[in-house]
Length: 123
Image (cartoon, rainbow, N blue to C red; front, side, top):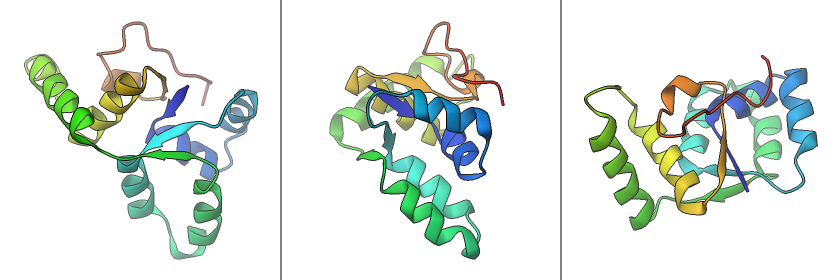
């Protein structure tokens, strides 16, 4: 399973050819944290709303439950001295970890808890 970070969704919604190629290469429906939905919906323009909503129906959405919240809090405690990680990124990371999934992001520096994490495509 693959969890897509917000950066990947934004690239897809902007028509980034490399991101689209990556999405087409997946053999299963990708997942996203509901936090990603918040981040995307916060930033879209009115004219983009319909296309964004249509695309978002093609993704499996994962809510923030107690296990994800506890893991995100734990990750925040572990990394707080060496990295300033946004709460949204902690939740996205915890979602991937709880699912036993890989994380796809172009902001690899935001996710030090995934050793050796590389972007899935060149932007």
